[in-house]
Amino acid sequence: MSKHHLREECGIFGFYRGDEQIHAGETILLGTFALQHRGQEAAGFAIYDGEVLNHYKDLGLVEQVFLSGNIRHINGIIGIGHVRYSTRGKKGKRESAQPFVFFRDSNPVALVHNGNLTNHSELRKLLQSQGVTFVSDSDSESMLHLYIRSGEDPIEALSYVYEQSRGAFSAIIMDGDRLIAFRDPYGFRPLAIGVKGTSVVFSSENSAFDLIGFKYIGDVKPGEAVLVDKNGMHRVQVVPPRFPHHCIFELIYFSRPDSIIFGEDVYEFRKNTGRKLALKESHSIDIVVPVPDSGLPAAIGYAQTINKNLELGLIRSHYLGRSFIEPKQESRSWTVKLKLLPLHSLLSGKSIALIDDSIVRGTTSREIVKRIREAGAREIHIRIASPPLIGSCPFGIDIPTRDELIASNLTIDQIKDFLGVDSLVYLSVEELLDAAKKTKGFCTGCFTLDYPGEVKHEIHSSTGFRQRK
Ligand code: SF4
Image (cartoon, rainbow, N blue to C red; front, side, top):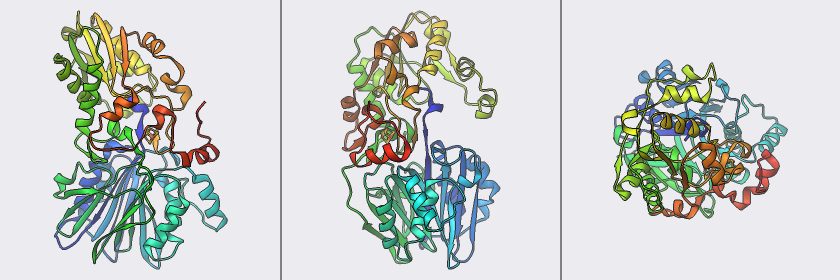
């Protein structure tokens, strides 16, 4: 519900031009722009034409950074783009923005990465002991050093990257005139492949493929590297896949509703979560109100199932920029007042089902409830299209610590009282997983504290991440 407390780490995009006449700069601009929701802190691109590398990155949104870097006037045969919200690396520092670029015998090697290496502090020490100096504290920079230091054969170099790296990584490397996309063996983060003739794109999400004229042909598989060069596309299973741990939060909230993630239609998944909530309904509901915009697909599924009207009882102000709120760090109450406008005529006297995808700290939800009460609602029943959020994320999603998560500290009854609602219902983990039609094998660690076994010890020892109590 309080979406500014849950952030994706990054979005990545890669482009390889085959025989088609496609403008690299324009394609990378549009492709990366479509990933803006995955990170708004910094953006950057690197484009190579076989001789000259154009590389530009800065703090800010794709539109401002890429246009400042003159991307519309840059063409080339290969390139990558990145949007960032940091969970590792210094926030607000230009040097932690991506792509990271180094040169090997005058050939550029550049990397963009989405995820989080759980053994980063050990990796950094290892690389430092080998004489590496870092320009940032980003785990993505370490990953590029690992790659560069392992010889010129890309598969051998990637084998070393896989051997050394733990945690979540979907990444794209531009190695001279060769583009390589690869994914950790658990498949935590998505990475889609699109083709147009002999040209290829890779992207965290496939939703922009139509816009740039590419056809979605599937995903880079867990443990797999997909290489594209003048001889075409080659797929190599670098390490065996592990039992998949696809991040279920990509489906609940992070990804765009028009994307296919892990083979699931995100919009349909979210509607299914709403349907499942409706099947548990035991109260008399007059109207269904989504918390905009994230609660909308679940609210549609819920309303269709209980056969009640979906009403936009909360209107979101679209013109409220972050800078308007953040310098003052005003109270949550003030922020909610600015952001969400309750429609009194709709809400007054009604029993309302208020639908959202998740509750993080609960403070924003409480303010929203207060506003709806002030608008004259008779009863407010909150329905959450995911289970209680009780754990942090070591794999690249910026979830607050357990101390700050309301469901980690209060019972459902206590949360209901804290929010000031008449009833509160969450989905169970089983119901959530059942909302996925095809995919099996999700990470649900932040709902269950059951993280992939192999990384538990590393998480505990290297990042101080809290373990199950
Ligand atoms: S812990 Fe939660 S947010 Fe992190 S990867 Fe697993 S499901 Fe996703």
